[in-house]
Length: 359
Image 1: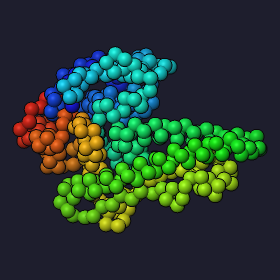
Image 2: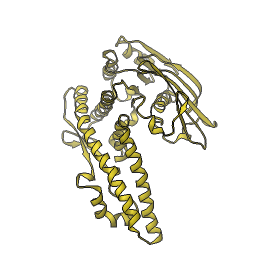
Image 3: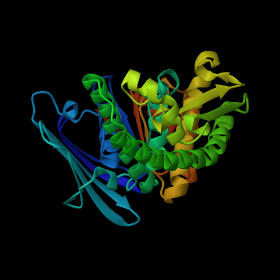
């Protein structure tokens, strides 16, 4: 699978631009702020229906313009897939596949698998549990429609339950029947989500550990641990235990929306005890494991986007990743960098076809 052509109109800093890509390696080079990352983000947007860096649709429209259009032509298993994502200020985003608009954006997820490696990935280590849940959910959702549907339904009912708790507090009232309906629905969805996440991590963690050992030359042991309140019991019983706390705080304090992943190195939290180099290797291993998992499930090589990757890794490590294209482990690859000579030198060493785009 590869992206053959990309056209941008009023997307972020681009007024109108068209790119014809190589099926293997594409390098976007130029000064900071010129739009290299925005090109990569537009590819991500086409693949998953949303921006990787800014989920607020209106903020992806070029300043002083009223709309944006991203138009991409993909080739997948000898078929052309034309995807168009467009949005007007004040209106709902539209995603079309071969001229037909999706009724639900979730139907598009997984059609064109993509993985991005970016300096923003450090948030997976430094930020809160929400970031790590989104990472886990993003991988599973590209391969499991049922999981994505359960996740969407869970979040919808969760919002309704939280609104009801606020209503109870504002009106100094309590009515158990509606709350129990929400409790039952959330318990059912949470059970499915918890089971799917557990099974996913059983497959994902060994892949991740293998990738880390390769990157770090077997220097240290790393771990990923799944933290979930559902390990203590089913959600229905947890709701009973936490009822007074939920009423007091006016939001739901238990459930799979509180799940987290603990990242460790040599039995210590990597956030506190991992060196900068170890943290970079950990993040790269996470993303390459994501690539491996999606590839194994979808039977398709995802598109890999390397955003400002030299900020994360030395040239030898980057060359190590790029060389995976020639072995067939990777499919189409996009690299952004501020130094054209450095990028071209690394890519040339792989003896693969490539294109340079100087922005």
